[in-house]
Length: 394
Image (tube, rainbow, N blue to C red; front, side):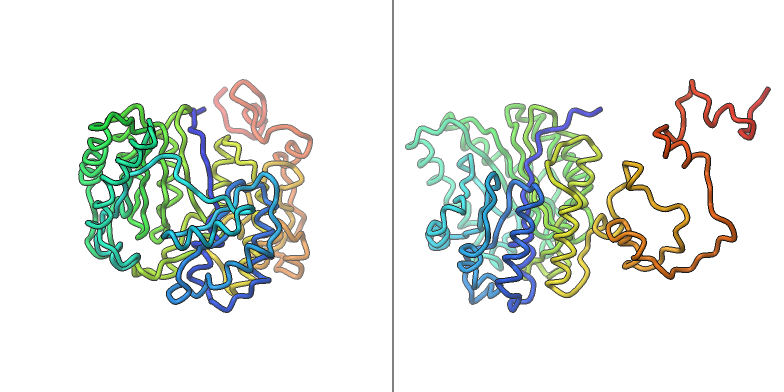
C-alpha cells in the first residue's frame, strides 16, 4: 500500500464550469446546484468569481447567488477575485465566503507571456515586477515561509511545449530571491490553463522539486483536461509525494469548464470531480465525499446546461463493491446511455431491452459472492483451483 500524501480537493464547477456556459442560466438553477454540491461532503467549493461582467457575463449575478444559497457548516466557500476591486466585492459577503488568501506569500508568473496578455491584459514582465514588492512585504510582516509558482507550467497553445528544465530554472530564480532574504520556501504551485500536462512531465516536475528542495512539502496543481491528461497527471503527483506532503488539487463536476483565452473553449475542461475522487476512494484516500450524491449533481448540471458532460463515473456508475451494488446477471442488453443509468435508477432503466438468452444465466462464482465469499480463493484455497472442471496436471 502506497503512503499517499494528504490531498486537499477544491470543486471549481460553479466558477471554472459556469464561466464558459450560457450567461442566461438562471440564478435559481445555479443556487440549486450549489446547494446540492454542499450536501455531497465536498469541503472546498468555489461559488463563482467577482470579475468584470463585460468580459465574463456569466458571473454578472454572482451577488445574488451568494446571498441566496444555503451555506453548510464545515464547508469552505470561496470566490475568484483577480484584483483589489474584486476582493472588496467579495469581502461584502464574508461570511459565508472565506476570502481566500494564499497561506504563503508567493512569487508567481505565467511561463506563457501570450496567455497572460490575453487573460489579464498584463505581461509576464509585469508579473515579475511585483516580486521584489512581495518579498519586502513578507519581510515587513516578519513572515518565515514562502512559496514559488507558475502557470502554463508545461506548455502553451501559443508558444509550444516547455521542457521541465525551463520550469526548474524559473523556480531556481524565484527560490534564490527568497534565499537572499532568509525566508524558507515551503510551497510550489504549478498551473496548466492550456492542458499541456502529462503524467511524465508532472512526475518529473514534482520529483525534481522534492529532490532539489526537500523542505518543500506543499504542492498545488491546477490541471486542465483538454487532452485528457489531468487525472493521470494528478495520480503521478500522488505517486511521487509521501505522507508528509500536502497536495492541493482542483476539478469540476462532469469535467465542465473552459477558457475563452486559451483557444480551446469548452474543450479545455478540468478533471471530472466524480472520476478523480472515485479513483482516490479506490486508492484508500479518504475523501469524505458521497459519490452517489456527487453523481446527482452531475446529472443536475447536465439538465441545467442542456447537454452531457465529460465525466465517466456519472455515466457508467462507480465500481460495484457490495453484493447489493452488483448488476443483475439476467439483465437484457445494455446499449444506450440512458439504459446504463440502471446503476442508480434500477431495472426500469433497461425495461424492454433485447433479451437473447434462452435460459436464465447462473454462475457458481456469483453464487459464492452472494454468500459473502470471494469470487476466487487465494492460491492456498480450493475454489476454483481444485474443482473437477479446472484443468490441472495430476
